[in-house]
Amino acid sequence: MPEAERKRMPEGVRRSGPANDFSGRTVLIVDDDPAQIRHVREGLAPHGYVFKEALDGTQALSAIRAGRPDLIVMDVEMPGLGGVEVCRIVKANAGEGGFGFIPVILMTARQAAGKVEGLELGADDYLVKPFDMLELGARVKSMLRLKALQDALLEKNRELEWANRELDRRRQELLALSRTDALTGLYNRRYFEERLSEEFMRSRRYRSPLSLVMLDIDHFKRINDTFGHPFGDEVLRAVAHTARATLREVDLLARYGGEEFIALLPEAAPQDALRACERVREAIERLELTWKSPDGVSREVKLTASLGVATVPADDLPGTEALLRAADTSLYSAKGTGRNRVHQHAA
Image (cartoon, rainbow, N blue to C red; front, top):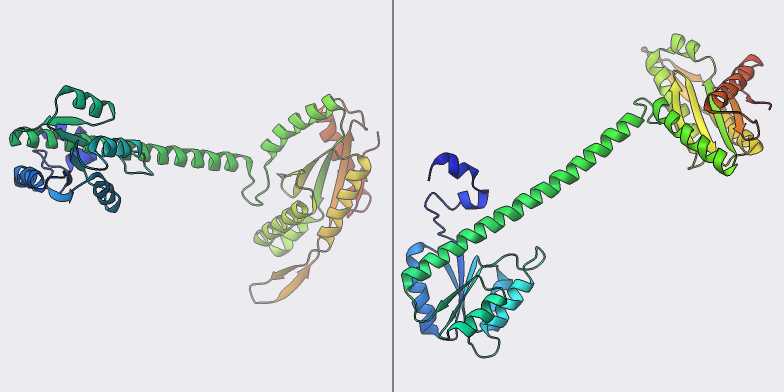
């Protein structure tokens, strides 16, 4: 076989060698006549197979459960559990949780009727006794080739399933990254604005309250200038964590830019939003951060924040831009009247 063609073959088939050498594969021979078992073994011995034997159907199933063979050569007529019934059980349990695909060659002294019954129950091939050993060898090799193809296909399907799961996982990771602020782990501005449009429409449709909060860390530029940007980043992360832990699970919190954060509070009427903002402000005021200088000197740094809040439909604002402007105006009112306070937009 040309090497290029061989490379296109599934892995399980390539492993069998250039001449389809299946030596080392396990063949289970099932027959109630030990002489017939010896006869089959002797005929197949030159191919280098590993043999297992069973004298009836019950022994055959035990042997299969103990270690799946690559092929079963089995007599149809045996006392107790016959070959046709064993074949039915093997094929009924061919899934990944069962025996997997095991080719079955049935042997019988009967003619067409038994052959049809066996094939209908899933036998992969049929031999009528007495049979030629060369024919048996060719059929066994053909069935082992079929199993190699089936196993390779199953492996490819597993690889494809894994690849699809991995692709989905990576897609979810990319989606999360596209929505997330890298420094704080909060949602980013772009995702917040998408959700704002959705929540605003829902609020308008159901006439339910929706509050928007803008939060700004007081004197953040001074913190950066005094203690350096790495400590400023620590401050941003601490405020983000504190605000997220203080707000409700349903509230959407994002970093809006620089030291500014923004939150969307569904179903929060003006007084509910005001109380939520006060809880956040107080939690930030309680934060205790320690700055350490390069020479080991420590200094406690206290933080405060100013918050502005606006609510629809109480404020009767026409759209998201108006809602954002109202919250922004409230924020600057809070900063302009002393900072470390919450200012609520007046309708």
